[in-house]
Structure formats: structure tokens, C-alpha cells
Image (tube, rainbow, N blue to C red):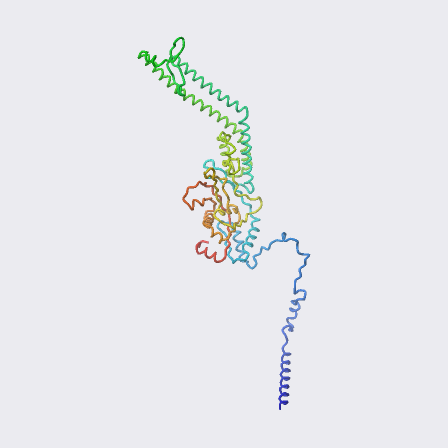
Length: 475
């Protein structure tokens, strides 16, 4: 019975396996279909294609000459937006790049900006100079690219040359002979006027003497064949008519003496005027040729002609003061013998044909963005002038692009407000942060504003962008 059961189970198992095999053989594999054989032959990978073996002979020794990959991988719309923002030639169109950290947005945008900036015109240089009309409002002059520092050095050299020539001319023997001649002529004229007045007094029996450091007339008479001053007792011994006549003559001569004193003062003033005129004439002969050379070399710079003329006029008018100053009187804190009023301060300088600047400011404080004016403390006194103006990132990026991290910008007090004010007004105007924060009246200057032609690129993560958008809906 048991043996019979095992035979039946074996027979059923064999029958089931055979049926399954027959059924399986009736369904062909998908890879065996005729219509895909051509595709399989074209797409079949060979064993050597399953891995990439690097050819070491083709690897360069350095990657410096390899061009960076400037493509926004998977960010075609972002790239198109950045290119559109860059290409718009109108002011007010800036870029806000939003993306999570680690996407490489800063690197890719900076590369794209640098690639575009190479084909842009190089912006001009800006130089601050003294305003001789109002020293508290320095002037801003616009020079072609690369010419700002050259003008600054040329003005410095011109001053050194002018000072040396002035010192040589004013120590020459011919100059001192001319000064002595003016003094001698004035002295002779004064002495002649004084002698005439003395003679007139003698005709009235009056003598000109000096008493208590003042000149006055006293009555005299001849006694023992000598002219002697009359004592008070001798005067009292005279008759009333004689005393009245003496008093009248003295009043008359005292008035003439007073008028003579004014005349002598006028003669001294005329002598000083002659000396000053001589000094100015010498200064003109020295200064004007040097200034004319600077004007001819920079004829295209607007406002430079007027500045240099005032520059020369100021030296000519103050030549005595300039030559009277000692070495220590010339800006000791700046280690510069050139007086500040005769210097130039090139705050923006660009290399010619270098394209537009691309600046990334990693510490965007108010001062670092907008610039500031330094102050000096000398002998307990705070001073400042236009030579202490320091540029900010906005100055350096004029005519190009400025990249900022929005989160870092918002962390700095008054930096965001200052950036908005500059972009809205379209000009860079230096303002003292101390005046904004306190009510103290510390000394400061008001430099002329500089036109702001720039595109700002803000970088931020999405949450920062939406927080800013809530507060600044105009963005």
C-alpha cells in the first residue's frame, strides 16, 4: 500500500515537471525577439567598456591652464536670469541670488560676472582735491582709467619742484639786494619827512624829542649860546601872551606830528606791499609754468583747469607763509612734507583695459561699504582733511559689480540702510557715522558726491530672502 502510494506521487511529480517545462518552452524571452536584435547589437557593452582606465599621459602637470567650468549645472533658468540682470544697461536692476548653502552659487556667479566684466569698459578713476573756496567741501575730479595715481604723483612732484625753486630764488643775493633797496628808499623818505617837521618846529622855537617812548615837541630857548629846553619855571616866568603862543605852537606841531606818524605808517605799509608784490612776482615765475604743464597733460578732465588755477593762486598769495614754515609744520602725522591743501587723494584707481571690477566684500560694515573719513589727534586737537578720505567697496566697484552676503550685510548696523540710500540716490556721499549715532559736534568734512554706476549681487538662503521680502516689499 505504501509502495503503491509512493509510485503514484512520483508519477504525478514527473508529470507536473514535464508540463511546466513544456509550458515554459512555449514562451520565448524578450531578448530573443527578432525586432530588438538590432538594438541589442548596437547597445551591448563590451567588457572593456564597463570601466574607465585613465590615460596618465593625457593628464596635465598643472591645472592652471585648464579653463574653469562656468556652466550652471542644472540651473539653466538661474543662469539666464543672471545674464539678463547683467546685460540690462539701466540703473536700479540688481541681482538677488537665492539658494541653499553648498550649491556653489557664489563661485558660479562670480565666474560669470568676471567673464562678462572682461568685455566691459574700464571705469574712470576718482581723485579728491582741496576746495580752496570752501575747504570743508573737497572736490571730486574724474580721470581716465589709470590716470588718477599719475596725477597724484605729478602734483606731489610739482610741489617739491616749486618749493625748491622758491627757496633758491628767495635766498638769492639779487632778491636780498632788492629787499634792501626797498627798505632803504622807505627809510630815506621817512627820515626826510621827519627832518622837515623838525625844521618847521625849530622855526617856532620847538624841539622834537622822544619821551616815554613817544615823540613830542617841547619849547626851547637860547641860553649861554646854546639851545636848551625851557623848564617849567622858565615857562611860568613868561607873559600870558607868550605862554599862550607857545601852547598854540605846540598844539599845531603835535597835530602835524600825529599826521606824520600816520604818513610814516603808510610808508611802511607801502614798503611791505612792495615786498609782497615782489614775492608774488617771483612766485608767479616759478609756479605758473609748472601748473601750465599739468593743465596741458590733463585737458580732458572736467574742473581740473579751475582747480589748478586756484591751486597756483593760493601758493602765490601765501608764499611768505609757506617759506616761513619749518619742517615739522608739514603734516607730521602723515609723514609727508607736502601740506595737505596741496595734495591729491586718488581713492579709486583702475588698471587701463582691465575691464570692469568684480568686488566681493566679506565684511560689509557701514565704513567698509560706503567709505569714511579718518581723524587725527595731534596735541589734543582732532583734525581731518580730504587726504584722510578712505574708499569703501562701493567706490572700488564703481562701473562694475559688488557681491555681498545678505546675512552678513544685515548683521552690520546701518549697512543695509546705507546701501539702499546710495542705490536709490545713484551717488556716493560720505557721511559720518558718529554724527548719525551721537549728537556730538566732532569735526568733519563734506566731500563732493561721486556718481554711483554699479550692479549689486546679494547672495542668501531662501529663509533670509523671504524675511527681507517681508520687511522690504519693494525688492
